[in-house]
Length: 364
Ligand code: UD1
Image 1 (cartoon, rainbow, N blue to C red):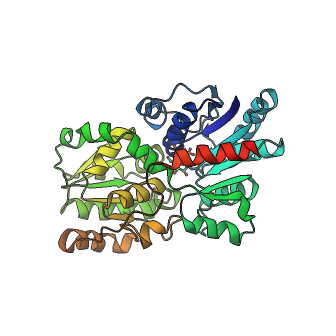
Image 2: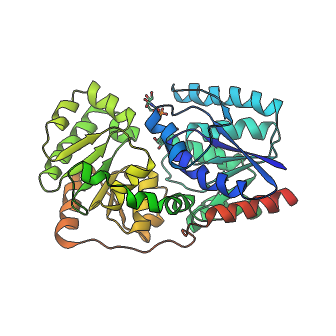
């Protein structure tokens, strides 16, 4: 049997490892081991995802918790190195671009343990984003780079990565969605909040660039207030955002808005049920840009750039600023919006391609 560590740390990681865990489990040669670094630890940020995706409790838990970037990265490296020295796996799989992704890669590569990166090659070309630093470092070090779209291949080649390390496998997030589609469709959370199908906007915000500066966040809250006068909105609030809304004295203003439902972070199935029935999405999340493209739902991304450009060139996503957000919402409501098309290999079969790639790699 080949032991394969799947590193999961933060909310967007849990759904990416799930289809891969199940696909590896179906083989007779792979023993997938879930390593939870503990970067996200709240029930709705972590445990509920394990239940939704029928994942077992993590086999290994590093329990690192929150901290500064260096603290979080350093603690994962120290804790994971100990695990690797005691019981080295045949392959380490890291996903996404969070601090734990680069930390686990550094620990494994230095011990000579083969490491693969799922969702490789994405670039925003914005080095003020912590995730961009994590992506650059992870891709420079990993042995096997699985990309979701052709721009990923091109970015890696431009950075001098040998082409034989790169393999386009498609978008694992679509596997996650298709895996749970039946239960997402059966859920009725939007009704519980008094919302009608296709009759509300869904907001998610957590990027430091949008939520860490009181002026920027205050401005965004003002625009949300205007938008809710035209379209009721629902806003599951990320812990980072909630903390800042409270510290900056902005929470009470949002709570007073008749057209806004403020919720705690949601687990995957209820959140995706809200996505499925939304009129439009306002977000700074990476995953939501992809899910909206797959579903053809108008998506307004409050960022100056995206590491997922196919969601704009092919899909229903558009970048916007606080200054033009409201005008874009008006366009969607009054004139409609291009539905876009689904990028190639975003087909729910990415986990199978990754499993085949692992088999070929380990047979070499
Ligand atoms: C992290 C990732 C980001 C990803 C996001 C998804 C990095 C650099 N960032 O950002 O790429 O899009 O996760 O959610 O890795 N907190 C809780 N409960 C938790 C987790 C965090 O209260 O379960 C609090 C922490 O105390 C901290 C804040 O939320 O103050 C931010 O957490 P952190 O893990 O540092 O980064 P995220 O903003 O969640």
